[in-house]
Length: 303
Image (cartoon, rainbow, N blue to C red):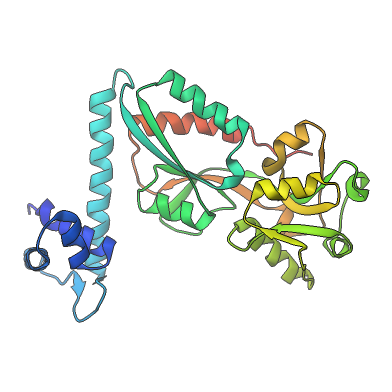
């Protein structure tokens, strides 16, 4: 059976955008034509692909299979064409990467610049997003790979590399807690605490630890800005809970100190480099991912 790729494309865009009208606007095709082509694809395959009578398009089980088949085929074609055109040398190409803000550092910037100097014809787009959004971008093939705090719970995304990165109490070296070997979470209620807001996976892990220990933090500062949180700690009065990678520069300079906690949850957190399961990356993206893997493996936890 020779399945019409155009009809599959119409089905894919309709499902991705939610309606045939939205797909028609994107593809500059009348919605009625898209509906007709999807109906012909259903006739061709001998099974319904969409559930009728809904406002937003919902795929049947067979429709989900067709959607994934077309998505995989597009990714394979992208990889194949990339290999054919750039087998001998990486001269052109576009890479999309999604990362959590915690990974943006001088070391990551150096990794990016080294790659771009080596392959000047490659353009790289870096999206800085929450863990959930990074996973979505990777899952939907809007990013070739991503870096997240913790591990992905999406079965469509796999961890290519994952490393321990425990969350610790972070203070300025002059803070009273700086000399301790271990801090109990309950102790932090005595200090001026600043935390990332709930959009961050880091904060969600802290909340999980609070529930496990039956305590509740009322932060003096809640923010979505890592830069603001670093400044808060640097003032000497602020205390926070973060993985070492977020304050790597300050630790290297000796300004900050990190102390382990008594929380099993915070002591077992990880970072992950993720890709969509089954996706073959274009050469440019694969080579860059190899560079990033080297950077990633250097994010070893401090003792």
